[in-house]
Image 1: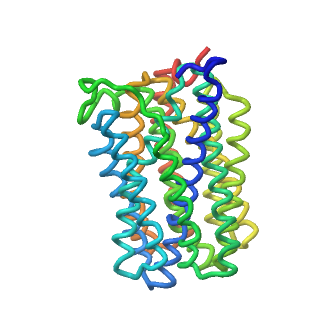
Image 2: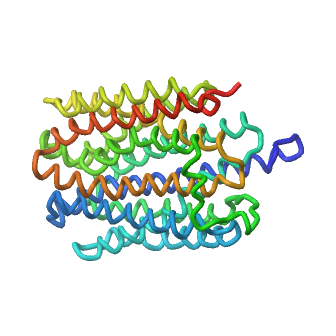
Image 3: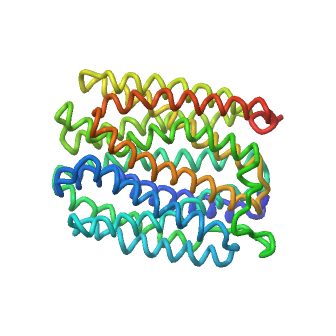
Length: 393
């Protein structure tokens, strides 16, 4: 897939398909992840613990698909599963609008299961360009598109909620999974030899580049899992925010994420370690501000601060993986990477649901700070061990 003058139109069409599907999937995925806790808490009368269990179920379904079905498949079969998952996602999404306190469990599980195939394959497709500078530029634009979808999604929902109920807004967002289904037919897959595909490739998880990517994302993924599940509930509980304002607040969060990724895209940094250190520092600061906020303005400032590391952390991890693995191994690396992120997504809401019930929203955000610091300590160890991955000439 090397870019030449002769195949520029093909190159542009490939990129547009990747970006279009990225926007559609992430906007709709974020919508149901952030809105479902509000729906089940205030419409279906779920407890805080039940909200956490529901989020864990969704992440568990993603984990099962990504780890045990998507990762071991060779490219041709994986493409069929990918298109089938896109179809399943487009079919299940409108059912959120007609869900009840029983069916929501099934709908969340199915939606999560399909995304376990969709998300890692989009990442892999975006990383297939042979030239490193081109590949990392496309990956930066890909992550920029993620942020743009996360700005526009909550903003669109906040406007929709002025005219329809929270549950009815899912019908409007069903257009995004439909767009993703069309795009899925045109997504490129890598050429892989069947003998190179293993059910569980332990060499992937032992790779230093993989460990750097994983530990880096964990410094943010743990607090982000809390923020998406309980950030809106915290705002409604402590500051009396309505659904529209909550979505606008998330839009502000993703705006700073977008701006930081925009800077990242133009800079295309070769040295990744400084970005990791900045991200961890701002994550700790943001969590402290959020847990001590006494007004809506301070609450928003915390979201704005936390948006910056959200913008940096993911593209840095993705680049670490692409630098550490050849093209034919990136599906396994991306799948395992996504799977472990989902495993954290399974554990965190389950644990935090109980913790929030015992000590409240504020203290729960605060006690995550030591966890971030400990993970960062392990990250520094691997950075010093493998400087070639975090800094290339």
